[in-house]
Length: 351
Image (cartoon, rainbow, N blue to C red; front, top):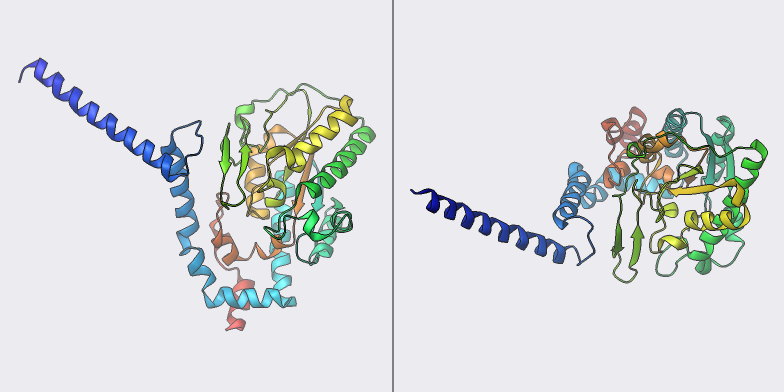
């Protein structure tokens, strides 16, 4: 075979391979709802497959919710079973202690928000905050008394917080943060940090329309470090990182209507000399153990202040079957997906 013929065969094969790759890329873009991609759609699809595998490693959501153990847990939790609550409180507290250890002595405020439930576990969150000398910042009354449920939430379409509620939270935490910084007389110093080592959970530099609920699409921006912020991290700022679940992430709202960007706006208008920058590290579906992993990947920013946003469903979320249902953030401690001795005893009594 001559060199000329050999090169021709290689070129034809390469051309066919290239057409195949283009076909796969176009097909995946169609499959993924024709969203805008700063990277190849095949990487997006890979992430979806990875998430699917993580979620289904224990049999999948449908399988878990149909288990007698899960139905037993759900019924007991709905009936406010005291023994079950003690188990869940103990497990959450263990996670909370680890969160404090990883926080590297940063000042932490426990931010409690209302949901459609009637503040079932507020007293518990208040108790552990006092126990570990963490300030408890309760905004449940402020939001509930501000208006009707349909106004401060997205009800009837959805139970998450509305723009109105996010504005209330933003004003409150902006004032709270300003009081702390003025009292401590914190001065802005240029941080000598490698921002490449700061990686929140979301994919960096994104600008996508999320249509998880087709009737409620919304745009999500992320910055270079994977926070749900349109602006990048400023080295010459006092950083406040907010960790939490979907009530911090802000589903069904654009970035600028969630309370972290609103806090930045209010702080710039009212306290420009403090140079505050709020960063949104909230991820939907997380509880304390997921938030620990996010904290580990972002704590090198050495934030001057941390808000840990909590919600009543964080308590039910630490049950081992609940942990198996969702995988919003990779958990490295596989023991959390297995029943503890107390959880095993509870299930055995349930049957």
